[in-house]
Image 1 (tube, rainbow, N blue to C red):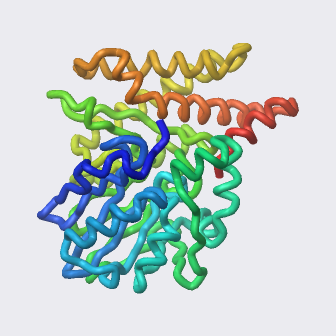
Image 2 (cartoon, rainbow, N blue to C red; image 1 turned 30 degrees about the vertical axis):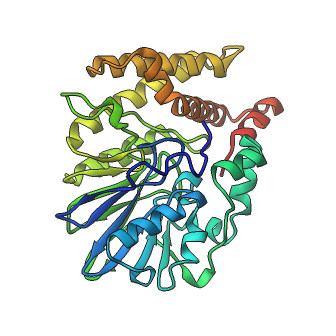
Length: 341
């Protein structure tokens, strides 16, 4: 379902972890409780972690004002990675933040300076009209305001250390952010997605997210192990919000990644590979959601996961094609068509 800017204006904009000054912002992308950004406040200074799309800008600024801060109080906009549901609004937001620097993985920095390749790649998949409706215009960020953050890069927010951790697997240009004061991690998409509709007495439900082009199961396993080894107090997901019980969720992610890879191999030679793979992933997820104790109807589960089923099927297909290094020009074109970065 495409995003329409006025669709969720009545939905609550943010929740606050008062103990640590962390605001969870619903960016309004797609549906409520689907896409989160974060505002961290420390002694009157602020940092955003991710920012949603260009359409999310009013929400970001509204939460800043609700926290009693002005645009001049923001020191950092930190991107976990440059996929458009995380970073599409970065240029527009930076234009409103006079004192902020943008922090991004070295592999993603060039796309903030010149987002034309991001736009072209995604437009090839979704079309120009849908791109403008869902994401809005992409605005470049001046080079002097962009800070490249390699593994271990630490920045200070009024003395509070935020450390960037190279965590590939979903994307090669992915950092997770360790907040050393609260002990929590902002994981972007590396630690999967967990929608609140699937919460039960057993806790949160979680599945991996592959991205359409750079899924690497071995790297993703390693990144998840790295985050779990930090023993964080919570992991703040983009999709959606903070989750605890990190070790159990990490184990669930490992299990589901392996199951998805097995499905990809099983359907690799199917004539209608994409349809077969998407159907198999949907069945896997429904079974896991129901086993978690969720009482939602199967049709509702499929509806809530429809976008992710499609994207994960695409991601597995591109991974299969990359493993095979196809000489077949049809397979190469299929992989290129799915490429969004």
